Length: 94
Image (cartoon, rainbow, N blue to C red; front, side):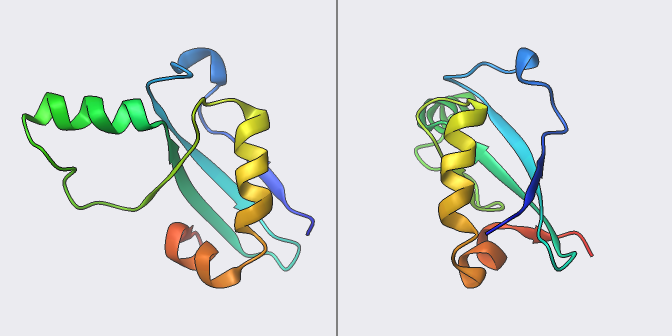
């Protein structure tokens, strides 16, 4: 499926192994979604910082082992194949 990606935060400002990033997806039909992609280490760090053994309920994250544009594109290629999952993980911007 064709789609466009936008990364509001430049990759030079994130830690590839311990961070999260917003990703904007625009589909050919004009629908737009934003998702959050994180690393497992980032989630562990958030729990540690909060002093909790769980992650506070929030928008669902998608995970990659390292935040690179390549890894995120692989993930998004799979995500856009299933419109239901895209709606679950993504926030519709329209």
